[in-house]
Length: 419
Image 1 (cartoon, rainbow, N blue to C red):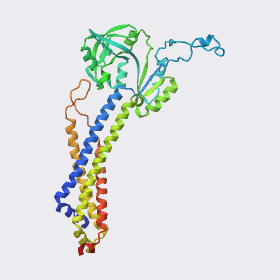
Image 2: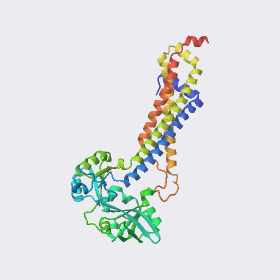
Image 3: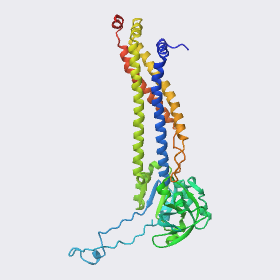
Image 4: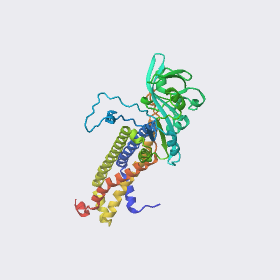
């Protein structure tokens, strides 16, 4: 297909100076390639971190927030505070249980809410894990394991055993992988758990899990809800938390406020529970886009310099074109077409380079660490990152070529030809 004359001239210019054209294209190529690599890697890392946090944290956690009030005492009820001032030294706080009262009614009410995907009642307590001379302080969570798996995805985080083992083995326990390592226990071994109140029970290890958060895998374990109630000497209605998973976790903040008002208990959403981690993720995202944008701008300046030099070297060609009847718009179209062509070719090759580098990083083995569940560097391949790369590359090169093209359109051919 025969191109219009303006584009034929642009094609001739590009092919006549192949080294200059390739140099300009490589500037865009490496800019786009590094942009794709950086944003793919940083997004992959953030998604891994967010997945680890979200799997370890329910979308909404309803619990009894215990607050001790020292402002009132029993003396206020038996004496006239209008005539005397009561002063109590070293008051003893009232013994308040942390359980969620009427938990079954709350759960039944929550089951009617179509926005909720899963509900898991939980009884958590501090315990000491004992195995021979080893004693570790941690957290024991009594759960309905199948419901808890819907909340945390525990079934896909098992290192050994299966979550269903808790349903078939009496007094079974699932330990964090790091915790099991510290205790030097394996599948089938017995471990003793003691509460701060002095009660203790022996449990058989039926599996280990790994969330990928070392601080969590070193302290957490799961047993069936009735076993924890038995260990603590509580009835079968006693729970300390109600964990929820939503169909859309973006609604968590508003729903948490709604449930707090409705049930009178504290309700934390996942964003509030992981506030510090979410801030770090946001900062990394901003830094990624800033650095990526800088790479593209630098590539654009390279094209600007090359186009400026090209126009300077072709002043006589421009003068001859104008003398033959080409308008300023035609001249601008020619050089702008050259810039955009360089941008498109550079962007496409940059995407290919970025994909290859990202694929290479994804296959690099991650330094071995028992506290982290990943074996290779996390990298994502989202189509919109590549679409943004092409769009940014074309816009950057268009702007970089526009100003030199406007300059070329204003050249006076008579002044050039006179020398």
